[in-house]
Image (cartoon, rainbow, N blue to C red; front, side):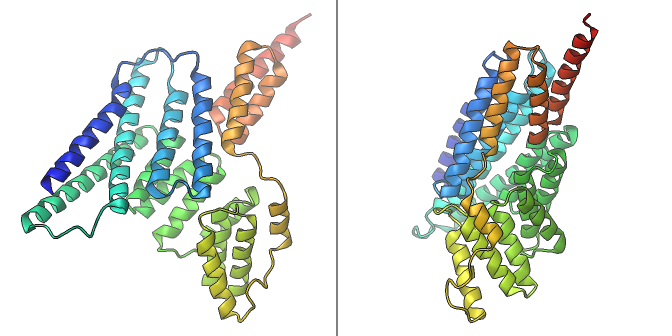
Length: 363
């Protein structure tokens, strides 16, 4: 068993080393392909989300892949040519975040795919194994706490708070995760995906109990994105917990109607529906989707955020070639506002105002 943990430790060191080496090398100015790289990462992130919805990626596998792509996006977006100190600081933060993700993913995958039915082991080996696990967990906690300290030093980093929230969630520290997601929610102008993570962490922190404040969060999400599955699911749970089983049943039926046909959560929701029908003494399938849910199901889904971001990046690239396009800068500013990227929106507005002043000063 000791040999196994030594092998795991060695493999982890090698993997982390290969991933971290490019981050700790002295940084050079950002290449001209920066925007192109960002678009590629965002497309990959969108593909991960689609695979997760179809059930092709699940659990820690999906979380680790998603987090790594977000780290790359954050690193590419924040790096500034010539800013050596900032780059070094960002590199250290990225290294720390990456180590957290690798360790969390390694333990999560082993916990899910390990072999608990192997023959018994001598007491000494079991003791060594338990000590190794305890040390790994302690180290992970230390790294997460260190990342939390980094966020105190850089409190305006939205993606950093999201990563911290997910790191806490991987350790079942749901209250801490909720606080991290709350910070990200405020900084992102209540972006839907961040808001959903915040609401879910709040519920998990209370062992699945949905309170009125949670309900308000999920209703806000549903108003912004009628296809969000967590909103309908937890709204249904709230109604069931309040004794409104008919209302809960309707929410879950609407969730089925607005979900993709291969969504991984459908089986669980169908079980809840069947149980509610039995308690209400209703015929199976007798409750139809509400008109609002039916309209959502009949309408084509909106473009996902990754696609929108790719389009916005394309517009930004065109404005590099034609920097005097006033309408283009105004459109870019509005697009950044929609995406919750306030600093970029201010820059685009400033550029537009400068072009207005130039045009008004001409004879």
